Length: 363
Image (cartoon, rainbow, N blue to C red; front, side, top):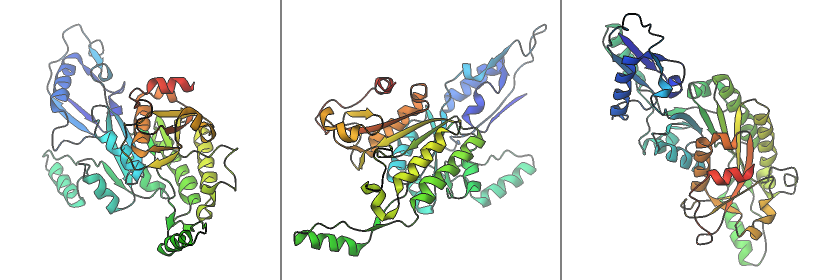
């Protein structure tokens, strides 16, 4: 009797070997299941019988690596998955289950509900887990449903650890978000009506130092400890030494120096020893993706050269999400690389459909 228990897709690769006879049964079972309703996306349990190895032939001689049988999807954790960019990334991964097992990390039940709307699950409740444990104690089959959504806080490494377990890749979409008080908005509108220029004052509920530096560092450390193979960090344009100074308006907002802390996190990631890709978007747009030509660059050169390239200084969040997913698909082209991204206006140029040539042009 052979029993295969996989806590994650990565366990398929070069870790478990099964006899040639068992391999056929496993392959058929996997292909026919296609993650049937009620089956966990992140785990798969199979039990089947197979005959003993023929006389004179050892099991080792008939062994077949599982990674030779199927293309196993990457298990990817997206942090900040309920944010506007993070949700776009999570949704795109979720819609491609043949290639990815998407998991989201959020800090509130409200954020979890966003992910639940597209089919993600928090897993079994504590009461169901208790009931399942009792059934298993009686010798009855009762597997817990693995969660797609994890509730936690990036300041708490203990809450990050379960979410990182068995992940192949981590996508960091957490970021400090400045907020505008209603009174500030009114003052700015009034100033504009009387012909005066006034910069509205923003504030942060949690300062960028705690999110973009300390929280990012925590994620990198936990991912490294968990054996994550690839970290994709969604950062921001403007972090280069030439642009990242006290005069940068992004640093002035809420006195947060957000680019300073983002740059520090990038340096920490680059020195971590984990394969990484850092994406620096321009201004983020809440527009549909897949309708524009994407333009890539490095070292904030696009901030000055975008017009000469026929581009804008902005890019839709959904296009950033596509870049993240393509970076996961083409890891070999973007390993230990940072790049900037903006887009052309709709109708200018051709919508980007092939990403490998874009990445190859960066090297």
